[in-house]
Image 1: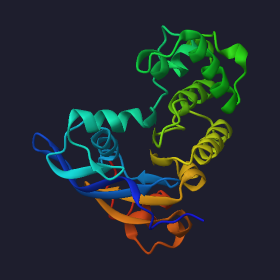
Image 2: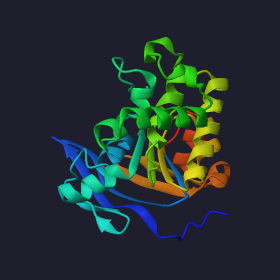
Image 3: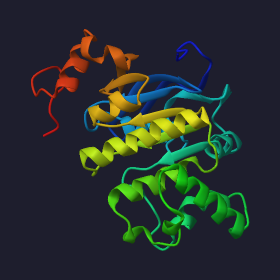
Length: 256
């Protein structure tokens, strides 16, 4: 059973961020603990990606505080510590076309941790097996893989350094429903195996129901609802109700 009162490994407190006159985040508060999977949902342009970028130190908040494992993330040292202990599965995979599959998977080992190429390849192949890819895929290029296989490679890269926290940015974008479900299963399996915290953003409600322990709804730069995934269909919240049921009518205005 998930302990929702556990000490958070990542915490955002009253985080604000604007780009010029556009206020994107207007006081975001979020917590996620080790072993928990939090999925952030919301309409396009509500600040989901900016929330993740702020948490990673890629964007500097205008106001508010971010804590990782109890320490405020502010200096270059604390940002570096967070990133070394964090994995990321980017939307679209974001694999390097010029590198082989195993070099993509072992990128952090090779270029950050100075692991030898022989050891890095061995560990890459071990992690490819964890996402159901054969060793024969290691020497291929990303362009030789299907979209689903590329996502698996990206997942293997995200977990190879055994991170304490993993971010998933639209992990099933562009995949057919069957492949998306297979990727979701792998995400759940690997996050649990690591005992890591997971923070995901997605529009795919099938993914939400599969990978989330808790769901947070972001609207106009604020969290307007948070609760267990089991409460989605009976939340009593008009924003959640509209989003889950995919209705144009409601408090969320279509982004057109």
